[in-house]
Image 1 (tube, one colour):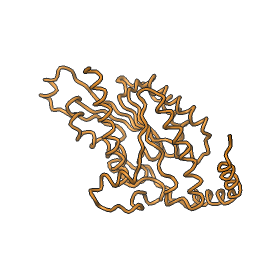
Image 2 (cartoon, helix red, strand yellow):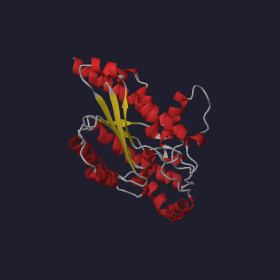
Image 3 (cartoon, rainbow, N blue to C red):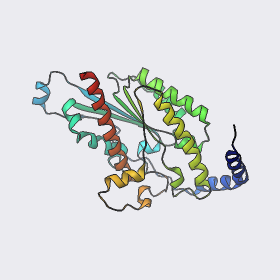
Image 4 (spheres, one colour):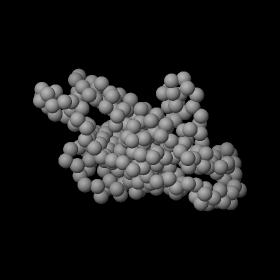
Length: 280
C-alpha cells in the first residue's frame, strides 16, 4: 500500500525532476576527475620467518581479494599505499590472531572506476580461477548503481549472482560487503540533489543488508565514516570535509585508513568465530 507520505515524496521528486537533471549534469561536468592511484595490486607477504615456517606442521596462507568500484580502487589517494588495500594489508599484519594462525598473506585488488554491480559480476566471470580458494572477499559496490538509477530488483538480482560466483568459482568462505557511503553528505552533490541521491543510496543499502542476512558466510559492514573517525581519532576533532577527497565525492586517505581499520577488526572477528566453531 502506498502511504500518503510516499505519495508526497514522489510528487516532490516529480516537481524537482528538472532541478535534479540540471544539477546532475552540472556535477558530472564540473567535478574533478581523479585518477586511480598507482601502485601494486597484488602481493604475497610472509608472516613468519623460515625457522617458524619449518616448525609449523602445516603452511597456511590467508587469501584476500578486494573487489569493486573506484572506492575499492582507491580513488582520492595519491598511491595505493594510502588507499583502502594499502591500509588494510598492514592493519591485518598487525593482528596477533592472523600472525598466529597463518604463515603468509596473499592479496589482490580487482577494482575499476565506474564499475556497477553488473560490471563487477562480469569481471568475476572473466577472471581466471585461483589455485587456492579465496578465504575473504571484500566488496565495495553501489555508488554507481545509485547514480545509474539501477532498480532495487535488478540490484538484488546482481548481488545474488555476485555471491553465487564468488562462492562457487573462487571458493570464498567469507564475503564482506561494505555498506554504501553517506552520499547525501558528499560535498560534490548540491541540495536538493544530495537528498534525492542519498535516499536512493539508502534504499539500495537496505536491499544489500537484507541480501547479506539471507546468505551464509556473507556479511554486511556498516561503514559509518563519522563513527569510524570518532573511534579512531584519539579524541581529535575531525573536520567532516577532511573525510572526502578533493573531488568532494571519494573518500580521503584519512577515511580509507578508518575504513581499513574497521574491515581488519571485522575480518579478525569472523576468523576468530570460525576457529571457535572448528575447535568445538
